[in-house]
Image (cartoon, rainbow, N blue to C red; front, side, top):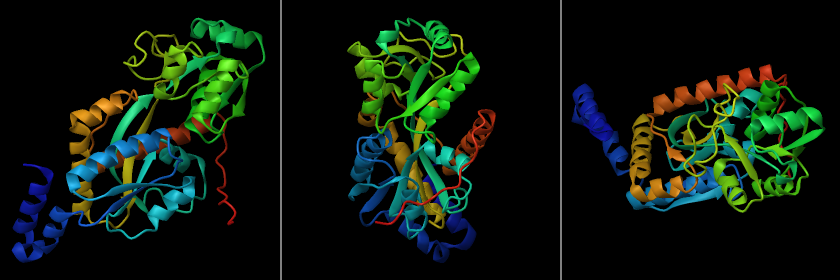
Length: 328
């Protein structure tokens, strides 16, 4: 019995047909366009994955599903405070959990104001180095880093790319300073030129540079090798243990959205991810579809948030007080 059938059966059993008036609303959802807010600019990995899923949901629902790109934490807060009817949703990434573990005073409560709906996919990061270094493997990179003054790239001290690099430094015992870039393209360019020694972009963001010889891939952070870079060892195979890490993406809704609608959206996302064309598009990004119920995804996000808090403590990173951007 599928999820919607269970909802209908349970409702009819518990309160009779009169009490199931809301079930028709659930099964018809959506009856108008749906907006998915992405707290990143167009072209970001979350945006790309979100658009792939949104396009398939529009086909399944027979309603337009639009992507609205906003900026960071204010975007999440906007969704948290939107009408809880299922027509405004949030597509986010592992940074949802990172933010919850890093900031002390977010304008929304990540556990009470927003509910987890469904995961989309996950993809590992790649450790890539500058060809100017001549490093052929992770051991080479570490030896050279210990002998010199290294810099690494990230997308800022609140990004997962920064945390992974700091964890890598700690586990391998060398120092390197961070240089922040605004985009994957900028970071890759800096590594390619030798302005910085290495960084950890998502696999999909590194493949083109690796194939062109502009970047040297030394490891991937997944539990298994990436189909996009099958010749590249995992970070564990390269000798660095307990550093498995992946970017992941998913869907949230404002708290208060009826549970039946949350379940239906989750079920429809699962259908979308099961379609061959969506799987093919995700595979080209080095991403693997994920499947969880809303409650399972909620537990997963809470676990990732706890891990983020532990990691920041281990790395000596102090939680920050969030400062909202100045109004124009």
